Length: 491
Image 1 (cartoon, rainbow, N blue to C red):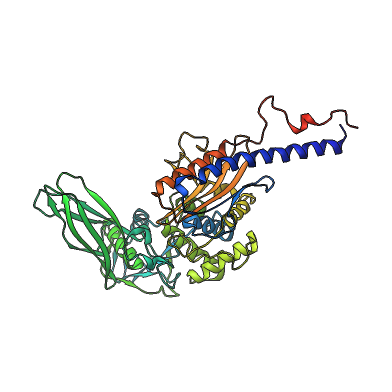
Image 2: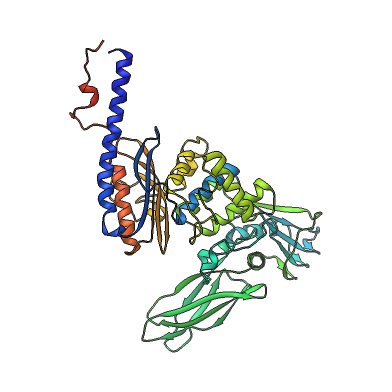
């Protein structure tokens, strides 16, 4: 066969295969979207084959609804681009220890936005101080979080007045996601339950009580609120004597002081005595740095952001990105500039065609179209130095993260890697799928204003993911193809 004819036949065959896939997906998607899960809902869908950019399915692809936590795909992508997968956050200790193990002045703890500074990592810092010979600090523990400034709460979070931990404030020096676990342990009927705050520190004081009852349903109310530069944990209600311990996550209000009080506790546990108080101030320019604690790689931390949809970590990463790109202090304004520069200069989105007002996707302040989300996914897939870590950060259908229990035992199991998003009026699923024929598709399914329970929407979205995974552009064995139909004796 002449080369030109061969290329024509191959091209026609490929085009025919794409048309077959489009028709198959359109039939299945149209049926699902016409179902009760999406009745009266606003739905946008865009599916693209990454090999050649062929559009496989569209439904309102350019409308820009609330994307929910799909925004974290944008934040993570921009962070990998600006900071690199190997970026590490740092936390520093400054002091002037004397040969006898005393610090006559202050001990300084300075943060640079680490979203993974857990209490056990502070314990590691404390033990390193101990093994360096430090035993007594006569001054204060000074906490410095000036690497960030601006409002601690992200845009839109004012819509929820609760103290739930999923709305924890940002802070350059933050410990344990800026949240505490409030444990409620029933006692004998008629007695007050035991209430403990973890991590243990002088930061939070429990006010109120929870009564243990022999009859009736458990009904516990817990909120945190500021009390000077600390917090109080207000508790009330009742707990059944027949129940086991319960735990409730609540946010803290003053991240650096919280971090300092937790550090003070682990210093004491490690054999280091602090004589002074925990105060917020700036590290003097001439203070010597004696310890630096570095975080895991950014690429590894983004698995928590995307697989488990950690709002606090997304906001921390964004502010750090702003500080590193435009200079400290980091804040939402700088973060917004960095994310927008990535979207417009790298991905190619038009300014004003989208809206990003926070880094986590919480509440109704963001707007992206399905096509725009797919363009971000397409861009990241084409970056050989970023793609492996970015794809690995996404939840796996039937495997990990927010998709661990979804799409199990379907064609999509372990073949869909995606970011979920759920709000009271929005449900999103955006990511990649490998089809039966080995092709990779990028997709975004954004649903707003649904009426049924969100679980019904999830099941419908999961059916769409399974349909994409189950499609194939390869002909069935023995089926006629465009290539077979071409004249083999063409000159």
